[in-house]
Image (cartoon, rainbow, N blue to C red; front, side):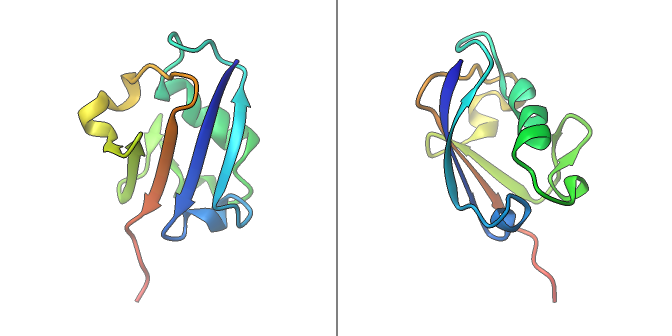
Length: 98
């Protein structure tokens, strides 16, 4: 199990039942599990509606900024980032209707 702090903003919280922050114990092995493992777990266990607005293939949709411990996940290895206990992962939608 790995314990993570997940945060949602910019409209992402609406897809996750209005939750802005949640601490989760994910049944993945810390250090061995990656973001590639976390995203489908989130889709299957936390997402409340419209999975097509969260994921595209095995990654997040374009327009969703992901921060891992306050750093852009692209700097951390994207989907290959190895999860560690107490990581804070933030999902921010940059897409807005007009």
